[in-house]
Length: 172
Image (cartoon, rainbow, N blue to C red; front, side, top):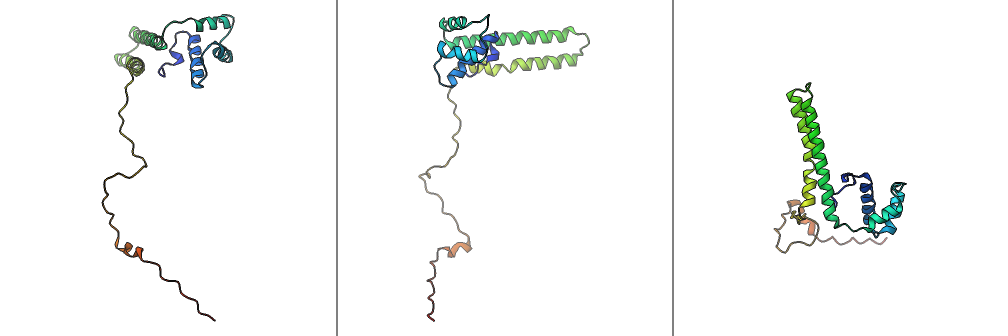
């Protein structure tokens, strides 16, 4: 779930815990209460309202697949952004000082922020497909088919001559 970000969570604490889990996964450490607890302490996530016992209870309670909940978090993020966009456009329309041009420009900008979430949603909800990118040429063995002979320049004709024998020194 590379598409899910800590900022996508409605509760800041849940986003930070997600970041703890992804950090452990990146380091290829096991994800369990023994490893998550020190990571949460390191990030100062534990306090009077969220104790180590609360964290262990949260980790021990099975709630479904991570993919399902990741999609739910992203869905909530999309709805939250849509609501904020709606309120922003409504604020533009309610302000009598805005000209029609300002209303159109402001609305377009607000909708552009919402449209930016579309690729994220599509990556999250569509099954992964293998990309068929063209092969990049690289060094390797020569192809089996013969190449055309290379035409040499006239001045290169004598480059195959054998070396002249070394001169003998005369004796004094």
